[in-house]
Structure formats: C-alpha cells, structure tokens
Amino acid sequence: MADKVVIIGGGPGGYEAALVAAQLGAQVTVVDTDGIGGSAVLTDCVPSKTLIATAELMTDVAGAAELGVNFRDHEGDAATAITVDLARVNQRVMQLAADQSADITRRLAKEDVTVVQGRGRLDGPGRVVVDGDRTLKADAVLVATGAAPRTLPTARPDGERILTWEQVYDLTEVPTELIVVGSGVTGAEFASAYLALGIPVTLVSSRDRVLPGEDADASLVLEEVSKRRGMKVLSQSRMESVTRDGDVVTVALTDGRRIQGSHCILALGSVPNTGDLGLEEAGVVLTDGGFVNVDRVSRTSARGVYAAGDCTGVLMLASVAAMQGRIAMWHFLGDKVSPLDLKQVSSNVFTAPEIATVGWSQKAVDAGEIAAEVVMLPLSGNARAKMQGVHDGFVKLFCRPGTGIIVGGVVVGPRASELIHPVSVAVAESLTADQLAQAFTVYPSMSGSVAEAARRLHRV
Ligand SMILES: Cc1cc2nc3c(=O)[nH]c(=O)nc-3n(C[C@H](O)[C@H](O)[C@H](O)COP(=O)(O)OP(=O)(O)OC[C@H]3O[C@@H](n4cnc5c(N)ncnc54)[C@H](O)[C@@H]3O)c2cc1C
Image (cartoon, rainbow, N blue to C red; front, side):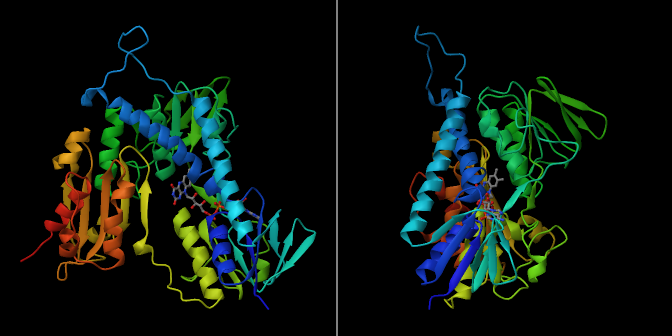
C-alpha cells in the first residue's frame, strides 16, 4: 500500500515536497489555509519581484538619456516626468500572483495530490486534524507553515498608511513620502523599488549600514547608489514607534527624532507560524524563537514528523524551503538524498543594483573561519557595462589558497541574480579558479568579468 503523506502548508516548502512525494508513489494530501503557493506566491516573493520588474524598467528609463534616448510629450517638448500608474502595477502584481497560484494548483491536481482547504493541526505524530473536525491519518507529516511579518505593539499596521509588506499591493494612490523601517533584505528591496518608481523614500536603519547581513562592500555600493538617486538613509536610527494622525505617519526614533511621511512600510523581520499547531504535544521541539528544530534532512524530534521552510528558520528563502521539503520526502520515501548544504545556496537581494552571493562570505574569511584568497573586480572596466551605461557593481571571488578551488562569490550589478550562476556551479562542483577562467564567455558580456576575476586568481 502507498505511504500516506500529509503536508501542512502549501507554500514552496509544502508544494514542492508534495510533487516529489507523488512522483515517488505516495498518497499525498496538502492542507492549506490561504491558497496554494503560500506567502511566497501570494504575498511575498512573487508579488515583490513583479513590482520590482516595473521598478527595473523605471531604472533603465532613468538612465536612457546617457544612451541617447530622449522622451518627448505629444507636443514634442522634452518630457519632464515619467510616472507610474501604481494602481495598474498593483493590479498586475495581484493577477500574476493569483495566476501563479492557479498554475501550481493545477500541477498538483495533475499529479493526483489532494488539496484540502483549511487549518491543519497535529493530533499526535501520525494524525492531522483539519479545522477541528476532519482527521487525516499519515505515515509522515511535513510541517511547512511558513512565517508572518513581525509587528510591534508600538508599530501596528493599519493596512492603509502603516503597512506590512503583505499590504502594500492594496495601495491605489501613490505615497508622497514613503518611510521604510528596517534595512534588511525586505526593507532594502522595497525602499529601492519605490524610489525607482519615483516616490521619495526614507530608509530607517537601526544598524550602521544597510543590509547588515550581506557583504560589506556590496552594501556600501547599494547605499552609495541609493543616496545618489535621492534616497534618505538614516543609519543607527532605531524606531521606537509608528503612529498615524489623518494623512500623516510619524516614525519616532529612540534618540528623540521624529520623521514624517504619508506612508510607512514595516520590514521588521518574520515570526514563525508555529503557534497552536499541536507541535510540542506531538513531541516536536521548538527553538526559543518558536522555530521548528530540524536536522539537515528536515527531521524534527518527533518520529515521522518533518518540517521545511520559514517555520524552521534555517534560511528564509523560497529556494531553501523547496529543497528542505524535497529532502524530507526523499528521506522518508527512501530515495537518494544529500543533506542540505547552506554553503551551496545562491541568494539575491533584488535592489538596484542587485546583490547576489553564494558560498563562503568575506566576513567568514576575515574572521579566519576559512582560508581564502579574494579578488574583487569592478564592473566599470567591463566593455558591455560601458556600452550599457552601468557604472556600479563588482564581481568578487573567493578561492582556497593551495588548490584554487572556488568557495564563494559576490556579484553586484544589474541582473546579478543571473550572473551568479557560473559561480554557483563552480562552488557546487568544487571547480578551480583556472577551470572557471578557461570556459569561454561571450564578448562583450558582463559574465566576462566573472572569468576575468577567476583569471586574476591564477597562481604560477
Ligand atoms: C517581501 C518578501 C520577498 C521575498 N522574496 C524572495 C525571493 O525573491 N526569493 C526567495 O527565495 N525568497 C524570498 N522570500 C522568502 C520566501 O517568501 C519564503 O522563504 C518562502 O515563502 C517560505 O516558504 P514556506 O513554504 O516555508 O512558507 P510560505 O510560503 O509562507 O507558505 C506557508 C503556507 O502555509 C499556510 N499555513 C500556515 N499555517 C497553516 C495551518 N495551520 N494549516 C494549513 N496551512 C497553513 C499558509 O497559509 C501558507 O500558505 C521573500 C520574503 C518576503 C517577505
């Protein structure tokens, strides 16, 4: 008889696991409250990157004059402003997210995965109760319930002017002064996107630089470019409260300063959706922050209960959630499986310019956690970059001193998310800098800089 798998949560952690389990012959049910695709598709990753696609176009348009393109109005006069129809942008964003969710739902149906709409809760390790009245028996349960935006009692979203990242797509009018609180990946991405859309943005950062978790050289480039484009970046500025009086939003800082704007986006991190799921009663150990404790094959402390994605807090990325979910199913259903290796994860910050990273970081090298040689090559010397009017960004590579094996890299520039791939392949396959350098690149191309950086790591 087929193994029964019940998955709680239909985001990438859940639906990717469902596809693998179905492929391996299991009888699979996905229980989800908000819609297949999860926050990744409906409120977070897909909507934000769709908004950013419009922002990217605006960034290109802003740089068009340098490439000899002028915009004229219908009377032939120089256009003084190109504006964004935010209501239309948001409509496109929400439609695309809904379509993507429908696509995934259809794919699950095609693979004979049953989708049950409702709230799932563990009733011991092998049983899931849906909405308190329907019980599903399982040989294995995968918990993939995701996470939700963190809010504070002193900064409560109202859905109109004080917004979480899930609420921004309801905006129909363009903010006249946007304040973004939080300079991690989400805060930086929204600040960069809305600035490109022509909205004055103030970014409030409690740290001394934006993107404190990213490569310091990369953060520096982003901060410099953002300020040059008109963003106000308030570093070492800790938010105490966010309040609204009519059309005015006030962000009070702990040092007594007060900043006013028309709208505020709170990007204060995420909290795991692990409350009232019956986890601890089923023997699942949670961390102090409420995340599900998992090992590298996604096992929890309870036999037959696996967990994947943001609810584990391992690395809050859709790609990692999906891989954790697949690994769980490969493990449970006895297929070939390699434990999750975070050093192989490539990730990207979708700001302008983008920042993509993979493998070991500069911070780890500086702290002596790994011995590595480093080369950093500005994109400004690249022929294609010159042609395209790209002035900012770089390629950085790390390799082992003796063997020359590539162990990490950072790319900052337009479409860095695409440019990082050869570096990811090198890291995954333990290629040497010489091997990376010897592969042909197109001339002229940005990827030429990846090969050139690798060439500079050559030792005789
Ligand atoms: C603004 C933003 C942008 C992002 N952009 C990117 C990006 O570009 N690339 C990237 O890799 N990552 C990105 N991420 C991260 C990515 O969205 C998450 O890592 C990903 O959503 C995690 O997937 P998941 O399956 O763990 O959870 P989710 O996608 O949150 O899905 C969980 C699902 O479980 C459901 N659920 C919760 N509790 C229950 C219950 N009790 N019963 C039934 N169902 C339940 C929820 O309704 C939801 O549908 C972004 C995050 C944010 C906030």
